[in-house]
Image (tube, rainbow, N blue to C red; front, top):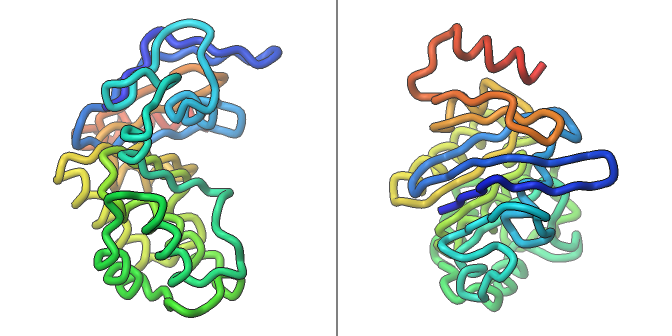
Length: 225
């Protein structure tokens, strides 16, 4: 699904260098302090910036030249983005229907109900958690093959978090690939297959979250702290 091979990107005194892979049907966790390189990784994957060296392949295509068809197969939930507060969830539904050829209206409505998102209430009246749930939902409802989730459960109550985890696991079981960025190691351990720690633009550590021992986790956590 995603391959980053000998990738190098420089911003002033900051140098991003990494090689990594995300296969089909896997949930990959990314963790690191501010400035570690997580955002640069996502920008490279989405073709929002270009590497000076190396290659970034997304769904079989070079990320610098993603076709409209490939873009339709990517779902993104960014922590700092969202729709205008004047819109309702129903408005968002109509926008997504125009944006994505494979938008599943029935699924969107069903999950809006499950996540307790009122269809006709303005987004500006939503709590922080409700806005986060809507961002996650908009990334999931057009049958994307690749999902990029930036702090997807920030500000969400435990019950809603578990609902989102279940959705992510279900999508991975269907063959979807997911990148999940979080600042909470326990959260990543609970939902991801693999976790990568980034530091200073480089890969500082990696662990198989499904088979990791407590010693492995402590070693990985030390790199993050």
